[in-house]
Length: 130
Image 1 (cartoon, one colour):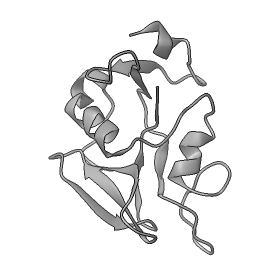
Image 2 (image 1 turned 90 degrees about the vertical axis):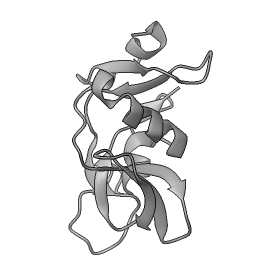
Image 3 (image 1 turned 135 degrees about the horizontal axis):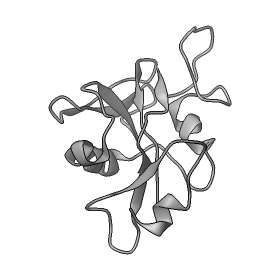
Image 4 (image 1 turned 180 degrees about the vertical axis):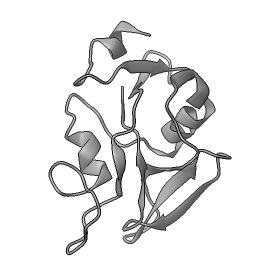
């Protein structure tokens, strides 16, 4: 673990540095998922959404101090290092990358496959920060 990551502990979730991040800017992540939720806000649903009511993107942002939903490259780094980081299931995780107004990219952690799907779908969320 790097001091840049461990000093930013949020709540009781341990934080670790992700190998392979950009030089000089370690990529940090929690060793636990934020939860399973939609990518963004949709009215009249019973699905879990972020703390301020607008989904995975805001759920990560709500952690403060630079936390965000990972882009496609950062999410792939999490997938490549999932065993070293720990506590990843074989499910699907959201990225911050939008395909269009209705769809965003995600990655399956069973095989690394990335694709896009409806933002109203519910997938796991693992936040990162630099």
